[in-house]
Image 1 (spheres, rainbow, N blue to C red):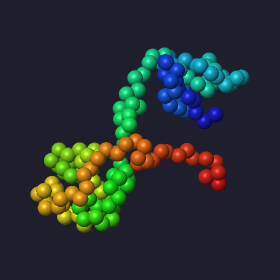
Image 2 (cartoon, rainbow, N blue to C red):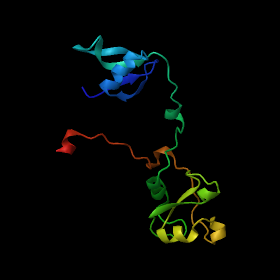
Image 3 (cartoon, rainbow, N blue to C red):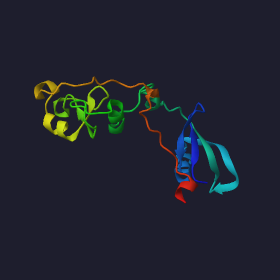
Image 4 (cartoon, rainbow, N blue to C red):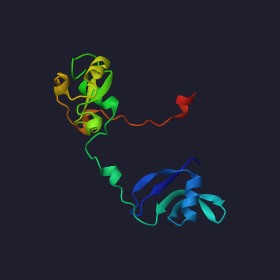
Length: 159
């Protein structure tokens, strides 16, 4: 048994934890066993397969950016497809408003850039550098396909 499913107090699945972590949760009395492996015990506790938290945990992190994919360098490069300054190959990303001037790493402040343009623009705004943007940055919809989902390793992949 590799891991244990943890449910919120309202029975929504939260995540999976190791058996060791699950036992720790039982000892701390933050969770109760909802489903156990028959015939197996860990000290006074049944070996858990599914745990349920005693108190509800707000999952704001899960719904924080509903409909908005997370910002990644790969996602920005795929969104733009080419350098936002010269139209060349997108090799890196550039902050439109530099981070040193309070610019954040958001969809609306990042554009794809080639190495040459990124170096030439340096720590300036596009206006100061005389390098107008060829495209306007935008927040892509979640279904745009810019979010890569983690793939679980399978036994066949390891072989």
